[in-house]
Length: 360
Ligand SMILES: Nc1nc2c(ncn2[C@@H]2O[C@H](COP(=O)(O)OP(=O)(O)OP(=O)(O)O)[C@@H](O)[C@H]2O)c(=O)[nH]1
Ligand SMILES: [Mg+2]
Image (cartoon, rainbow, N blue to C red; front, side, top):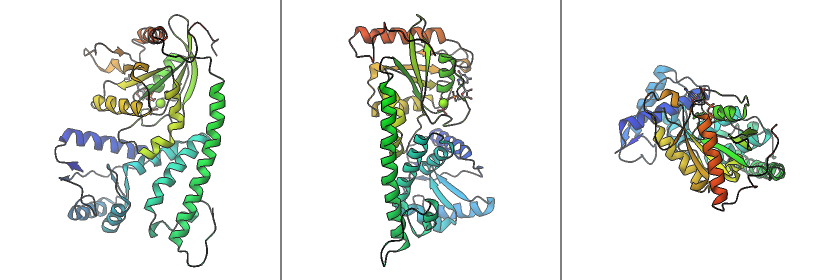
């Protein structure tokens, strides 16, 4: 949906990203459609006539799922499904699906499951009666007169409570582990998905973390020691990527993994400077960092993929290429000087810079 005033190239850019997300979730993109409106239609989000056009397009291409770039209400989703005879999901549901398919660690799996259930709860309709099977027979059909829908809701709530308890336990264990690292300076890599955080992490630590040209390659934060120019050893943390319109409940449930970012002495905000929408990526990243409560003086902006920029070198910012290693020495120096500057300014670091820790 293009709301009035939104330039066409922005709408295209957003739909390109949505298509990328859809392929990441394993879908094949059959087509795209845009409607310009002053405001969303209350009942069907797009106009009811457009919904019928979408139904015909699905029938013609054999498409089974309609993905909307904006959040739909539960009733809009269900109305659209009635009209189009297709499954209808929105961007949040799509992102959750990618996360679910990629989550490996117990913590990530628990977080994604919790986020998915919280997303489903207000959307439960008669359509969802298969849910009892999905969550694996938790909870028994309640007292007399309870409908399947009520039973499903109750089951979901129970499951959500249980997952929240599990998460608290997992987080406690992680805090104890982090407590053990108190004496080490941490530098976290954060930024838009696919910006090259893991590639930079590998360069900085000689690690071999999986790098992929697709969104959300990394779902769990990873830690590893690396040396700065002056021999100073710090711990680098690779983290989950940000994305435009990341569903808020998802941010909340991923806060655990993003705690590395909050706790870090310095955050490298990595931006793919060669991306056509790099300014929006930068803005989204800054907003999430602000949202997480990371103060500006703890953020170092790093423009990555400088190899793709040709002669346009950004000035005033650290520019690197994780691919060919250009600018890495400068980056290490900049990290050192920022850490020393913070220390000199009396900003509390997790430990004194004089302490050195042996590399792994
Ligand atoms: N040309 C070029 N490509 C790069 C550079 N850095 C990373 N890439 C590529 O960009 C893609 C994404 O890199 P990753 O390191 O996985 O990015 P990420 O930020 O960790 O992504 P997520 O974990 O998905 O958030 C991969 O195909 C990398 O090979 C660079 O400096 N130049
Ligand atoms: Mg990564």
